[in-house]
Length: 428
Ligand code: PMP
View 1 (cartoon, rainbow, N blue to C red):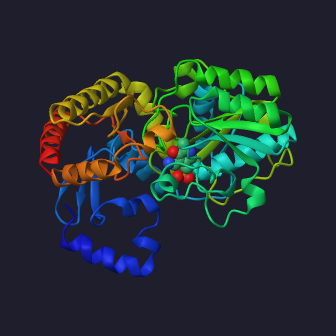
View 2: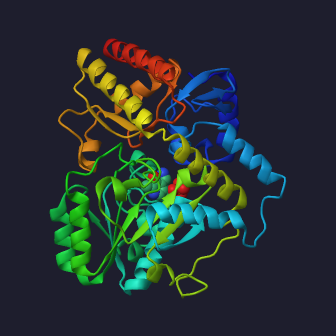
C-alpha cells in the first residue's frame, strides 16, 4: 500500500504532469502510485519503506532483475569513457551481430531509441519497399505511441478506453486496417478487398498488451502464407517476445519467419532502445543508402549498446529460460488453484516467463475475450497483492514478467501471497 511520502510526491506531480505521470499505465496503481527509492534483484523498494516483489519489471526489459551486477559493471566501465559520441562506436557492431545471428541471419539492423520508433520505422520501411500504403494490425496489439498504430491499440490505450487516439487524422487512421487476433477469416476478408495495397501485416506474435494472449496453433503460419500470397511483408513486433521467449524469440518458438522484426526492451538491458532488423534488400532502403528516412541523436546510444550486450551475454552464459518457465508455471498453477478454491472461475495464460490471469472463464484468445474479464476483480487483486508486497501490473491489459533472479524462495513468497489474496478477495 503506497504511503504518505508517495502521496505527497504524487500530489506535487499531478500539478506538473498529466495524471501525475510520464506514461499512462503508471497512474493505474490505486489508490495512487508508489514512488520508487531503488531496485535490487527481484525487488523494488519504495520511498515509503516498502519492499515489493516486482512482476512488472519495467514492463519487460529487466529480464535479469534490477541492478544486475554484471550489467552495472559494464555500464560503469562505459561511463568512464564518456556516454555519447554522435559517431560510430565498436560495441554497436557487436550487439548488431548478436541480434542478427538470432533474429535475421544475413540481414541488417538499425538501432533506435524505443519500441515506438522501431515499429514506426518498420512500417515506413514496409511502405517504401512495397510502394503500398495500408497496414493490417490486430485489435488489442500495441506497437507504440505513434500515429500509424494508435488504431485498435492495446496496453494503456485499451486500459483507458481510447484504442483510437484523438489527434490522429482520420486520413492516417484509415490506412490502418484492423483484424482480430487468432481469427484468420478477418485477415482474409481484409486482404481480399485491399490485399494489393497492403504493405505489411504487423503482429505481436504473443500478445502482451491485452493481458497475455497466445497464438492458436497455425495462426502465425497462416499470416505468413497470406502475406506471401498478396505480396505484403510480415512484421513481427518482438519488442516484448525478443529474448523473452528464448534467445531466438518468437520466430524460432513458433517456426515462422518474418520479413521485418522489431525489437526493444531487453536488447537495451534496461536503457532506452528499439531496433529494426530485416532482410538486407529491405534494410538497404533506409537512409543513408536508400530513401526511407531514419535518424536519431541517441540511436545506438553507447550505454544502451553496452548494457544490451552484457544482458544478452548473461542470458547466453546462464540460460535462465528453463528455470523462468518453471517458475511462471508454478505461479500460473497457483493462480488457477487459489482462484478455483475460492469460487472464481478464471483463465490463466502463461508462456515462458510471462503470466496473466483473467477473471473470465473459458479461455482468452482475443481482445474481445480479454475485455470480458471482470476488471474490478483484477484491480482488487492488484491492490491486495500490493498490500502483501507483490507488485503485479496495475492493468488487466498488461502482462506479468518474471526475471532470472526470481528465485524459488521469491516464488514461494509470491505463491503464499496469491493464496491469501484470493481468500481476501472472496471475503471482499
Ligand atoms: N511494441 C510492443 C509489442 C510493446 O509491448 C511496446 C511497449 N510496451 C512497444 C512496441 C513500444 O515500445 P516503447 O514503449 O519502448 O516505445
